[in-house]
Image (cartoon, rainbow, N blue to C red; front, side, top):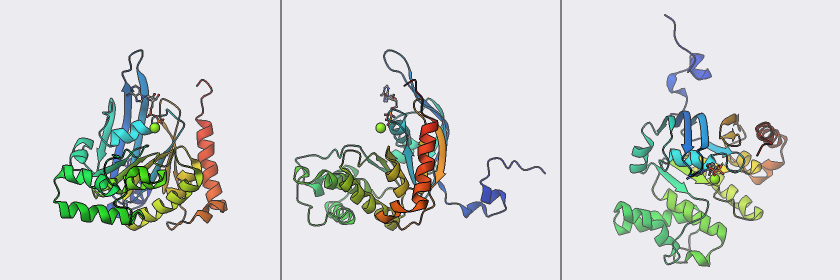
Length: 280
Ligand code: ADP
Ligand code: MG
């Protein structure tokens, strides 16, 4: 009997147990997305195939306008692909959304100024219909996780940009999602705050063991945070390279000074350079 081996991962092909790899949380097969803009169609994604496994921290990196947000929104069922197939946690993106399997952190914190940060974190739980005591317990626990214990009663405008973004991460985590989707959450922050939040996020990820998909256009942020880095081309967004970022799971900022870190950053930079189109 001839077995079709082409779709197997190397460890499976070598005879490893089929369950040796963590289960796929996102499985995209030749995804395309064309926006029907008023003047002419915009091809935002072209034949994107990708597997993201449970516990992965995957960064999507590429130049502005290459389709990173679009890909994240397709995973979140906020956009429908025009071609190809995608599953999220083994089901359709729509079912994953309705079952609240993911939390989404937007580029801007998007907090309501008239609600305390605790009540901002509680809002999606209110919409879910959870009892007040549980809403409050979850909000407090998540705010503590992101280092905001003691700030529960503050209003967003009383906090720094970094603290506001940590609040929006707490709000996404309060849903206890399997998957955390983050779209350049630290893009608007100064470098020192960003370093601090990167350290915080990597610790949080290690403790929670959740799957994260993180959009950035910072090479060092991608290398520091990720287990794998997906390098995307300028529009139409295609995948140019998927880089294993096999640095130790426990990461401190000093890691950025090591040759291993520099080697991965170099490969990301080369990938981005290769994809650069001078027509843009
Ligand atoms: P990125 O997040 O990498 O900067 P986006 O996914 O936001 O890129 O956008 C990819 C391309 O699709 C861009 O050229 C953008 O202008 C275009 N685009 C995004 N959203 C829409 C939309 N709703 N209608 C038309 N074009 C869009
Ligand atoms: Mg974007």
